[in-house]
Image (cartoon, rainbow, N blue to C red; front, top):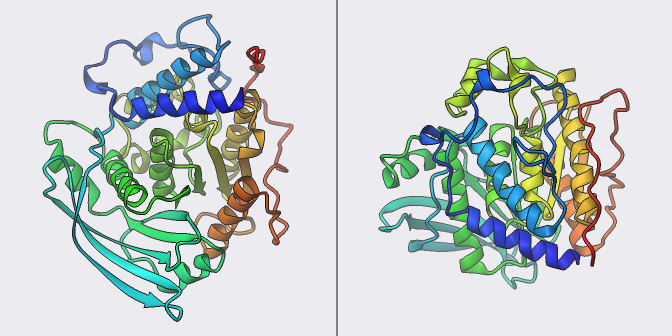
Length: 381
C-alpha cells in the first residue's frame, strides 16, 4: 500500500511541475478581509473552505495539489514553469584526490531555446560507485574542493549550485510573468537538478541550503519528484505565523507574492502555512535543521515538525521525517550541518546508524499547542 501511495504522490508532483498558479489573476481564494482569524495551524488533511477531509490516496493527491496552489497564491507567488532542457556548451574535468574524484566545470545553455548560459561546478567519484548526490544551494561563491572531498569521503557526490544567475535567466525566458526573485532561483535550481539527474543518472538526490537558500531548496523539493531528501538548514520554511508576526517585515516580504503583503499584523488570518511544503514533499524524505535563534523561530521549527508527524504516519513513512537542533550554534551553516544531512540520508536510504550518534526524532515541546487535527483512518489495503 505504501508503495502505491508513493507512486501516486510522484505522479501528482510531476503534474504540478507544469501547472504554476496564476496568482495575480486568481480570484478563487478569499482576500484577507474574507478570512477568519485562526489560532491553530491549518490542517493538511482538510480541504480548503470545506468540511471534506482526506480519506483515500486519491484524496491526498488532490489535497497536495491544492496545498501547493495555496502556497503560491498566499505566500510565494507563481512558479516560473520548468523547461527540462539543456545543452552542454563546454565541460572540463579536473582529477582530485589522486584521481578518485573528478571536478566538473560545465557551461550549460538552458531554456526552451537553449540560449540562457550558466556555469556549475560539481564533484563526482570517478568510479561512480556513489550514485547519490548532495546538491547544496549556495549564494555567490564557487563550491570549495575541500568540502567536496569531505563529502566524497562519506560516499556521496557533491554539487554546490550558486543561485545568483537564475532570477535574470528566468525573467529572460518568461518576460511577461510577474514572479518573485525567489521563484527565479527556484526555476534555476530545478533546471540544474534536471541536468544532473538526466546527465549522470543518480539513484538518490539530496537537496539542501541555508536560510533563504534553504527556502529555495524546500520549494524545489516540493515540486520536483526527483529530489529524494529535502533538508533545509535554519530556514523559516516552516510554521511561523502563530509565533512571530515579525516575519512579515520588509526583509522578508521582498521574496513573497503580493497577497502575502496584505497580512501585516494579521498573520493569524493566513489559511496556509509553510508546514504545507513538508506535506507536499511527503512521502519523500524531509529533514529540518534548527539552531539557537530567537524563541519564536525555534517554536516554529518544532511545531512544523510536530504537525508533519501525522502526515508521515498516515503515509506509513514516519522514519523519513526528521528534525535536528545544531545548538549552541545559531543561524547559519557549517560542514557539520552537511554531515548531519548525510547522517540522516545514511539512516533512511541505507539503514546505516550514524556514527555521530545524532538523533532526528527527539525534539518535542509539550507547551506548544499549534494544531489539533487527528490522523485520518488509513485506507483499506
